[in-house]
View 1: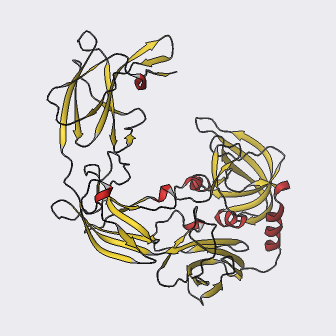
View 2: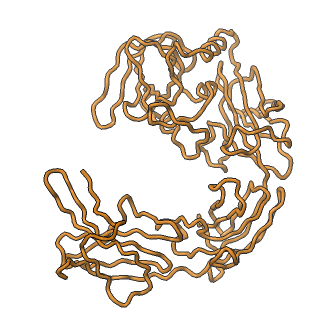
View 3: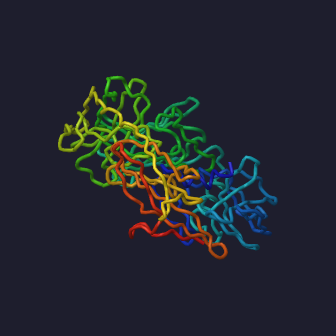
Length: 469
């Protein structure tokens, strides 16, 4: 696909990110070997012409004379290579010679980007030398397989060789004798002259350990994907990367206040009381058909279970209607049961019973002006807060319908703070719009007895009018 070499670099699971100079673009830090394994075509070419398409998402179309082929293209001829003109563009000018790593889109057209590994021939250096050596070896049907198995670090890889692992097992996908590759002192392995094809590579771990596959070809796959094989290209090389860590485990079931299982809920949290990094403090998993949950790959430490422990929740969350609580049922951390987990230890069969769902209430109100009369064109938005975090309902808040008479109605949940703002669009001069905000009162809804009245006037300092051109 055309997006293969562009959007793939923005995958959220992607490790090893760095800023690309002067491009406003984030690229994976990949070796030339990995870039070769990803590309559908690798060749040297001279740019004959460049043109740009019309429309909002412009593309640069390069007419390229192929001079030397390493993978995936014919030996000579003229091809067109596309690159976005606005998102991670790779720029080529007429008359220049480039080493091009390209993908092939659904139409069979070649596509490259700033992140694909393409470069000027003058700066090709070692990669051109290696590609030419592989091409000129005269031995068909051979390739190189490289890899590393490292102990868990932050960010994942590089780290250090895990003491518990000494080799990996490499199994051909279509049968044949497996290959055993030993790790060197730095956790790397290398297989020279391997036959091209697909292989399943597995670090051989002792009990109590688990590994994560960081091989670039497999990053976008789910952890439970049955196909974890990787492709090794003819006359090319491929890199496999694995991270090893202790496999402490905590498992149990999540049930509601009546004891019924809460199935398919992405919302049971495990809080590490002594995290090495702030973003490792809370981990969330999804429950199975019977409410079962499993946390694995845990290191030794102190943990507590619960729901909504990180105070980050949206209206679309499965646990939005559940109050924050710590196992076995405390609203505060001081009442939580602490789980002491040793090295590769396992704690099983914990039953976590959620507190009763938050009650829903309907709040009604009216927006009036300083004269007490409805304001023509009045509009309203809201945000809400759980714990210490303000959650924005969209870029400028979630809209609330307001009648011509200024009345509105909003369904809210207890234990949640809502910030309401009323405004009216006022056009001044040309292309200028000023939104006058209301008092922006912070309201905790507890079944108010009277309708809420919001006057359209300048509010406190944190409620200044919004301006936009």
